[in-house]
Image 1: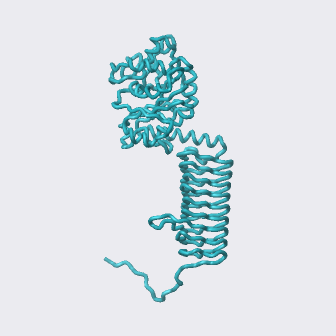
Image 2: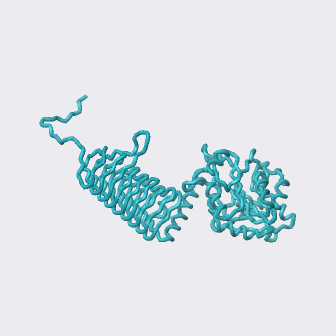
Image 3: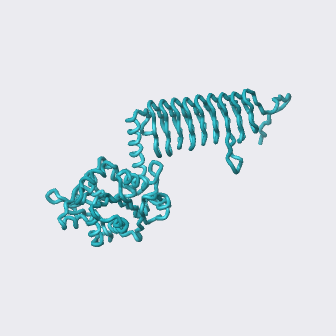
Length: 440
């Protein structure tokens, strides 16, 4: 049985933000949410989050039935933090259980890496996730004697020989729950930081004769933590690069893998093309043969097969485009369905609308869906042609095969198969003079 403790109590002063550090967004969701999702994928019996600074905001943002919360106040170090979680884990019983310690500001740790670490721990060993760095500055060092781990020394407490060690402690570890319950109350704080270091349990394990195993991450960036906005930006680009690689492995063509942002989940069919600087938020589904042109923002939307979106289009939540739909430059669609073979190619807003098949929406057309207090729906039936610069004041229905003349403001239903026009008669005024600028 595996329990997971996620340490998320840090203040994050270097972020220079009112938002708690672990709630800083990475790929559209809090860093802590990434770590929680990883713990879930491991099949953890119980996940306990240790919170502190900004605690209520953290709890409210990540609230879920499968999460348990332990408050660390004051913050007296990593060992003290894990100790706060132990009473919650003990309710499951200690027999045969293992505890995995993760960090809310280390968001890219991989499931495969953690499974290797858990495997290295087995049923009766302490296992540490370590890494070899050319520049280990700032990290605790792994001290070995005869190849076996004997202890971890924090850099501020290390001598010159220990600082020369390149194998570093990532902080992530797996320990038998019963042993952890013995060790944590014995921790002391006689060190340069005056804190209770979780790393001191290594020496305790060695003293008991317990084997200390190690495992390495698949990539060094998996164990990188975030302390400031520059580090956050670096991990964002690494994560987006990984997402782009996964999309291309599944057959998606990206004009430039370095210029795509996925802030949620993106499902793509066969032969999808995505041009540069597109942002996908929430849950987005692109069907076979879809083309997304440059500079589009798509959020919680579905795009049907062989449809074309953009450039500079925005699909907002609730948008569902059917087969062969064209949404062109500077067109916004929100909470609307657009049936097959319809198009809105220029400068239009389609909000809270049901659009039929083979509809042409002219440039500058808008559905006026909001009356200042409530939203209303527009229905546009099949084979409708809407002229440019038309306003459809909802609730209103345009009948099948109807044509709306350019410049129409539609406030009543338009009958099917007829031309509907509402605009003043065109006049020309003879002798009219254009105003001229006055001389100073």
